[in-house]
Every structure is written in structure tokens, then in C-alpha cells.
Image (cartoon, rainbow, N blue to C red; front, side, top):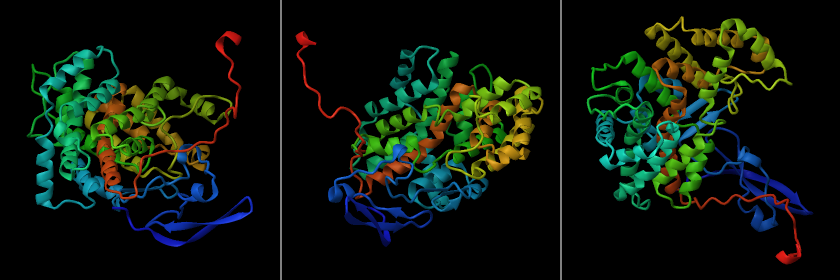
Length: 434
């Protein structure tokens, strides 16, 4: 059902001498919203908003981002409190259901996810169809899209039970799909999920264990990865989430919608930011080169940009970055990597950026991508797996948003309009006369 909107007044717009009243809605937090949904019918005009950066395309109760004040809320809970006191599956339950689970609810949910983690055995053959050097995101996107061909009993979006089953399957199988994509690119045998391990530990075991020897998961490292998952679980109506909603608005099955979200996330301007930050550190190479690259970053005529600093939404410190900074140092200490040359560059760059007046004034603080990239590298993941891990974590956000959209009585198939600037009329000439 649609959330009841609190109408606070009207905005008046005059078009060609005629005035139109538009309702204004007040959200529970954040800026008020002007409803333009009937403007075209009343005035025969569209609004123009490239990227929809000033347009609310839905009402939602899931995630709230305040970029000016550096606030991120999941269902009203502050992100730092959730990271410190819960695990990823507890946060997943919260995003899906609106409330934190009690002990019985959490146990049931954890067990359901755990026992859905196996893939249909025929699906493992899909991987053989990819080149060995295929990007893990290409493999992940393809395999997720194929899930609907194997799990026909959870594709009817009008059935609440089937939606619930599909939801749990997606959250459960994403680590298995991602780990198999990683193993395939290495040429190593697939490692099947284990029911005795928690979500993050199970994923690490599937990625890093090999048959000849026992692999013991480091609790500090699995806890850090769990935090990375929580911090990436949802982030309001970003490009990939909007893609999932748009695909879902047509009535597409949930597996197809999530595959669409993965494809959108793959873009370097979205999910590839932490990989770009690591590439930048590779380019800088040593701490001795930092001054030179800082100078390049300050030069507006130089194409070089510091990746992993600043954020399109957050105009103050990214609240996720504060948590990742602490976690990053814990991981480096646990692994004894303080002397790693690339990580030395990262730590020195972090220090300069937090103190340099140029970066402080422009609020170019290290963001979550800067720290998560360092953490994932330290854990042993190659750069081309970073976005896959992002997709793994964001799946719960996508499916929560998808479920909300399905249950919204106001939702309709997405159909953005355009400002057409092409030819108004051209005379057709037969091919023999052209």
C-alpha cells in the first residue's frame, strides 16, 4: 500500500498566463516534495530534470540519506549503531521487514538464508560457458539472470509467499554465485557453502579455501567483511536501485530485476569507485609521489582526479567512511600490513587530505570507497571482484526496494519523458532519388 502523504500546502506555477496549483508533501525527514504528476494532463508540459537528481520517483520507508549533514538511516536506525551492534543478516531482516528481529525471528531468518545457499547443480555448468578471463561481474550478472530458469516456484510477483521465497533465495545464493565466479577466474574448483558458518565467514571460505588444506576463517577479517556488507546494503534511490525499480515496474520477475541492478552497478561511476581508488593508488606508487599528485588534483586543467574522495550526495563526511576508517586500520593491524607500499600511500594520502585546507574547504573527505577498496585488497580480493562484492551486499537493498514497489498501490510502469530536439518534419525521398 502507498504511504499516506502529509499535504502541507500548494506550490503555484504560471505557464503561458495560466496558474496551476501543485500539492506539496512533507516527508518524515528531508526536503518537501512538489507533486507534478498531473502537470502534463493539466498544462500539456513536462518538467526537465536530467538524471532525475531533483525528482522523487517514489515514496519509500526504507533508507534515508542526508548528504548535507552526513546522515544515513536504515528504517530510522543510524548506520553506526547498526554496524556496531548487529550483523549483515540482522540488517537484511530490518531492511526487508521494517523492524529488527527478535531472537526467534532472527534464528528463523538466518536458518532460511543458510539453507537456501546451495545452487542448483546444473547452474554450475553455466560457468563453463564463459571464457576463463571473463570479468566476474559479467559472470555474476549472467548467472543471476538465469536463476528464473531454475526456480519457477518463486517468479509469480503477485504471490506474497513466492516473493518471500525469491527474496531469501537471492540473499542466500549471491555469495555462492559470487564465490564461484571468483573461483572460475582462478581455475580453482568450486567450494560449496557450509551451514555451520555465518554469512561473511561462509563467503570467505568459499572464496579462499582449497581442497588440499583446511582453511580457518579469521574472525577479525570476517567481521570486517560483514561491516562492509552492512554499509553497502542500501543507499536510497541510486542508479542501480532505480534500475531495479524501473525493471520491476514492468512486472519482470525478481531475478531479472536484480540482474538489471547488477548491470547498472557495473558502471565505473557507480559500483566501480573503490576499484578506481585502488587504481589511483597504483598510479601514485610511493608516498614520495603524493605531493606531485596532490598538486595535479588541485589543477583544474589537469585531468587527474583523486578517486575515493568526496561524494555526489554527501557534502560533509560520509558516515560510512568513519566506520570503514576504523575497520580498515583493524584489518591492517590484524594482517600486519602496515608496511605494504600501496597501503602506506593510502594512509599518507588519507592524512594529507584530512589536513590540507584545499580538501577540507571543498569537503573532499575520504569516502567509503576509499577505505573499502583498501580493506578488500587486504583481505585478498582482486580489484575486479570489488564490484561483485558490492552487488552481493546491495542485493538485500534492491530486493527490499523491489518488494516495497510491488506493494505500492501508486506504482505504475516507469515511463520517463523527454525534451525532443530532433527534426520536426522531413520530406521522404525514395532510395533511387537520394
